[in-house]
Amino acid sequence: MPLTSSHEIPFDWFKGLAQNWRNDLIAAVSVSLVAMPLALGIAVASGVPPMSGVLSAIIGGVVTTIIRGSHLTINGPTAGLIASVLAALAALDDGSGRALNYVLAAIVVAGGIQTLMGLFKWGKFAEFFPSSVIHGILAAIGVIIIAKQTHVALGTVPDPGNTIEVLKDIFRKIGTLNPVVTAISLFGLLLLIFHARISYKLFHMLPAPMWVLFLSIPFVYFFDFFHPHFVHFFGHDYSVGPQYLIEIPDNPLDCLIYPDFSKIHTGPFWLAVISITLIASVETLASTKAVDKLDPYKRQTDLNRDLIGVGMSTMISGALGGLPIISVIIRSTVNIHNNARTRWSNFFHGVLLILFIVLMAPLIQMVPLAALAIILVFTGFKLASPRVFAHAYEQGMEQLLFLSGTLIITLYTNLLGGIIGGTILTLTVHILLARVPVTSFFKMVFHSGTRMVNKGDGNYEIRIKALSIFCLS
Image (cartoon, rainbow, N blue to C red; front, top):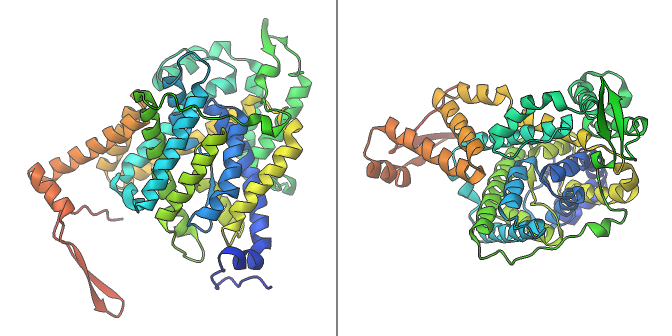
């Protein structure tokens, strides 16, 4: 059957598979090459086994595709939930060594809540959170990733403390960095920065993160990371050994870990559930709406069905030892740019990850943790880059205030505190700017009386009877 033309909307489901499998498979190859290093890195940064990230990416492809409502979105683990999982591991650690099992139970419950949200058609709930607060949370996540992973990239160990203290520790411990580990990280950082500018075609056959993984392996052989020993540099001895390499089982089935629900009656458990549910749901819905705007065929996603899809997949992922599954914007963008046409590109990317992990397990075991760390530091910088703050300022000084306030609150508390604190800050400022009584403010917000009148010939008139904020650009 011939492929669709660029103007014809592709069929969905099995007609779409028969019609567009070539395009979708080619796109999936690029997506899976990006997804593999990110899944490994996100898992390590979250404090869970590396295979947990790959497992959730596989489930996000193979399972979510069948349930969800979106067409071109890629599902899997994301850097946005690293902080939530880390916080949950710390909060649920009772010294028994089963903190991960408790967190997996929280992930299963969070997925169940997401599924119910979709069934009750709460897909629009993300619009209740101000966009500046969401950007502030994402920027805070970027800072948290940078703070934690820079130490891994330098071979240093931070002292216990909040994110601000961990950031300060980078400078305090710069004199104790491991030069071998740091060399791998700096080499990887240069590859990430200059990959797009290298004209040699060979370098564009693989995405930059895969090159970082592959080209870090010669360092491992040169300095013999396979045996614990010391390397002498500048009058000091620095440790080198297998502790700096990715650890995955030879048999992928050995990575399965099962949840423990014995903490379900405790406050920390439900705090973890709420944090994971909120962050995962908001980021999924926001990413899905963004992908819809990039869809060349202008298809609209059923957000409620998408919540059901990621919720059920997250339940399965948590039940087997995986991370929460959401819709991810970066991998989805790669998917669209490589001419994917239907949901099957997400399915194929999951299948390809299975093949990669089966065939490449011995190679992955040779990859240094520093290579994953620098990929995540680079990702974190994108989330919290100066461009994010400049864009907020362009929308108005108050938007920069909301973003920065949410960022600071999150860094000193946690993600849930950031969402609540940022929303309260935004609401308070808007009430002050409105200069009306609080009861009148909420009355006008929830009973606006705004309506749209069709004037004909494609013209509409919006009649507003409420508080309104306009952003002109």
